[in-house]
Length: 273
Image 1 (tube, helix red, strand yellow):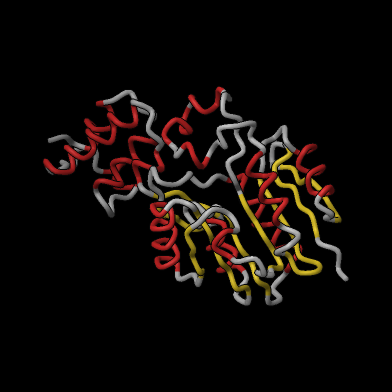
Image 2 (tube, rainbow, N blue to C red):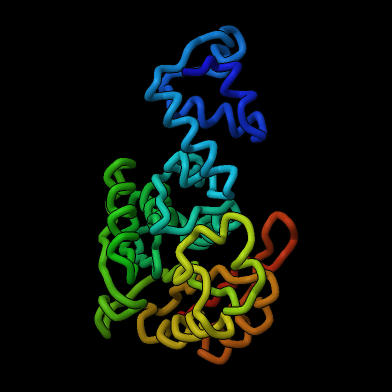
């Protein structure tokens, strides 16, 4: 067994990460208690769990998977290796949707929903919206449905590839997606947290644009007049995504930067007949 102080010093982890792991294995352990009671003894089970988590972290496994959750738009979402870890950059997609549609009733779908972070956040932030979410992975949908239940969000989840489960005549005021957009040979796929995330949610195993092309091509038939398509993409894909949106006949095409000033979200609107 270890004391808190011994646990904090035992592995070459950043101190903040070690504290987070300790708070995870011993629920209710506050930051103040960690400082005030360094000789508090962990149980054998807590010590064993901490040791296992610390070793996994030292091997590079993301903290979000070790802790089983990640914050997004002010809420905690459960995550597992079946889904991408929600990232702050994706909050720009949510903000763009809320800014342009407001709180009026709307039909909304999130394609490739993963953990459900986008769809669930939209459903909670805009109570009048009817939100659907689609994902090809049954395991990802299980995570998303669990998050919706935990957070009290009303979202209709469907399993399938992009538009396939929605039918041909579905009419939406908003289609959003954060699809796989990393090129298959991009070195980032072998670095950092990305190494542990589901590859099928990261790359199209092609040029990084095939999923974006498919979503954009299918959008006009499924958007209502005045409806929006909003897509997250790579920092170097803004030009080509804008071209694809315009080629599909969408108007008011624009690319929105993230906090680093990089292209991150591109949007386009159906003509309002």
